[in-house]
Length: 292
Image (cartoon, rainbow, N blue to C red; front, top):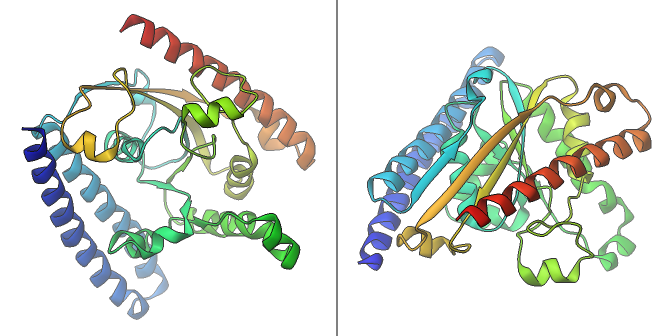
């Protein structure tokens, strides 16, 4: 019966995406006709459309009982949808993204994340993400850098530009600081400092903190665990991921990171802080997996 769930879930996702994207595209068409205040309101309303999409999807996941979702967020009542947040999370599967959007929505503002430039060609979703202000990044090879040194600052400049747009209204900025999805092969290639995580990369994180100035209220650290193994997205839609554990911890950004003007010193402080968070996350994952 798993394939039946998969087909039903896929039909729902496709229909929900087409309907929501159509509404999004229609609203964007009228944006040039509006005064500045109207455009600002419209940008915020576009995020409401995004939350509608993710809310509908969450309803479907739970109605079809695609998994047993265990969500823990003890300090959720300290947060609100009218402030800005930085979200960090371990990354294992495309399923991570739909879980984050589904279970953070309504507690904090709509989640936006950095995505590969190639995804803009995905029907409906690619253009929708671009219109919603999701920053696109590109991986530059050494050969490309040698041919065009200006590409060295492409991601930094794109991130800072995106952050200016995020300041228009409360937003949650997601950063997968491992830089890629966790696999055993990638973990083995690293001189890994953690058992269940790849080593964190703070470059993009530093750009976001610099770009958002003092707008960021807190950091939300999300840990996603698949006790029975990391699912492919199709397996998840077929209900073949029996359990998903999602836990959130809120952190205040250390004052030293926000006030230090020297970029190198700031990166050193940021790296040490993230290392502490990552070590605690790794220990939690070990503890949870042993408990299962």
